[in-house]
Length: 288
Image 1: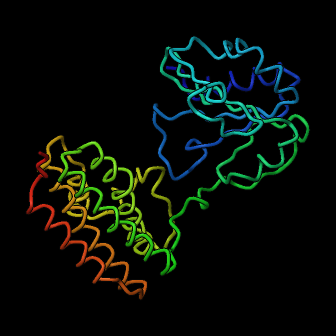
Image 2: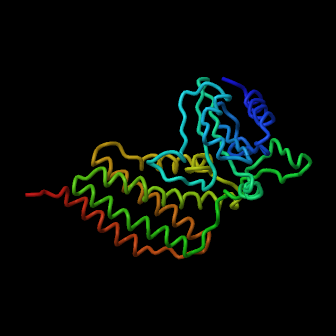
Image 3: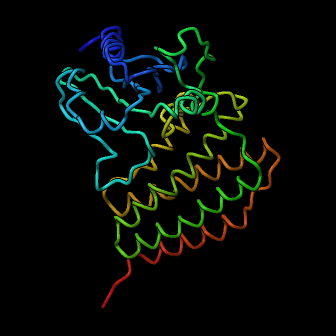
């Protein structure tokens, strides 16, 4: 595997040799001083260019970065709508298992690029070599203290969607139940847990994309309880995961309520728990 020094040297060598590339930026975890480096980190590279169409029309130009194991160009894919506007991306995994995610940015969007993400580090600026830039920071991604209205919405969404999980389990529709548990119920639980972390750390940090660092800030018993909300492939295990999520959400929501002087709507929870228990006790629906 190539070293970081070798990757940066190649990225800059390509840029310096091509007059159309006016600025080279780096984003992502490699610019975040709070994230420890490891060999699996991507290199999130940006080239600000004067003729983006010429690059896009000749996809072979990226061969200069090495032999690829697999390539994805999201803006050229029929399955996924483009999300970068006038920009274009190459997601490249190489045969030495180094990964570079390279985005081309039109030159007219240069200033927007420089200010849109706090985790930006400029490696080369041909037009303004002496320009100074603020230190990269992940502050934009720190946990935000919720308003009471936002807190209530989270609680309502959590309890409302647990009823969908129960319906799916009663009807023996495990994929439907799993989808609602995984895509809505647990994200609301994780949001509430992140507020607990924020309270305990004075809302001064990020728990990362997909809450990947949250384990570091949770008590071991809370972490283990969270893991139990990930169900295996049986209906009984799904019910256990759902009830575990309910217990952990209650515990966490009450903590947030007390610390932020909110009012938790216990009646809403009690009513929904009654419904869940009724559906569980009735067992699966038998169709004639």
